[in-house]
Length: 99
Image 1: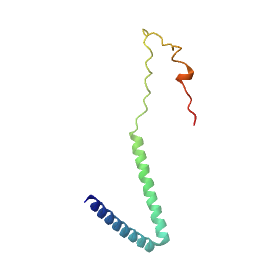
Image 2 (image 1 turned 180 degrees about the horizontal axis):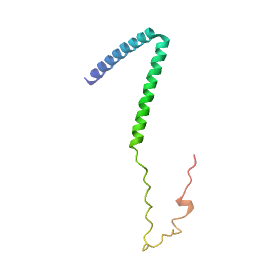
Image 3 (image 1 turned 180 degrees about the vertical axis):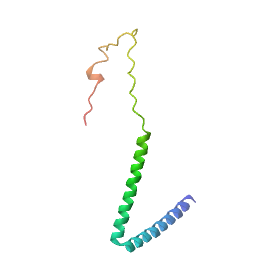
Image 4 (image 1 turned 45 degrees about the vertical axis):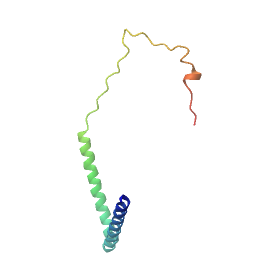
């Protein structure tokens, strides 16, 4: 039953897309070359204006960057960490991965 539903949805969407595309082609033929170029330029201008307004709005909402606080160092009572010879062996602890 689900397959039949999605098959019918796909068929309806295909019919709608075909009908709209044929209408768009007919309108483009009626406008001619100059009309199509003018329409494309007008659309590009509107998109650029919208993008400019969006960037301006986002830029005005941006906060000033906050400097991170320094990382806390080791406490004075903590003993210094020294690597032991068994864990710092270069042959076992660090291996290079080559492509």
